[in-house]
Length: 142
Image (cartoon, rainbow, N blue to C red; front, side, top):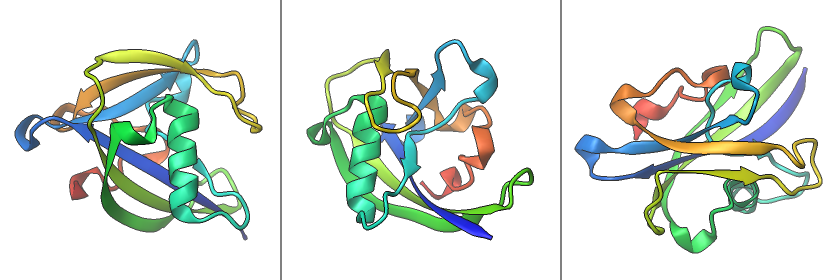
């Protein structure tokens, strides 16, 4: 079985009792579902480098807008429709940038998501809708 290594970022803001999580949807493709920033680790790339690269590519957020909190969890995800296992490495950041409620960002990368536009918003963690492909698996650990 093939293994694909992934990083995901739980980016939060606000006090604990009102904490919000940054989520996105693909513009014009609501069927893909609500997700958090993340993606594949390139061969030979360090986890932390992949994490910051994926967050910047997908969100447009600069490194200085994020405060690294730590690693939340590592687990294997086995999708039912693929003969593949995804090693998921989930990290937590606090957003410390200028206040913004929502925005769009078009991905510029060498990957297959180049040119796709993502629509970002904040969702209260205690009211979080289900995330695509079980990306909310570790939210309760925040």
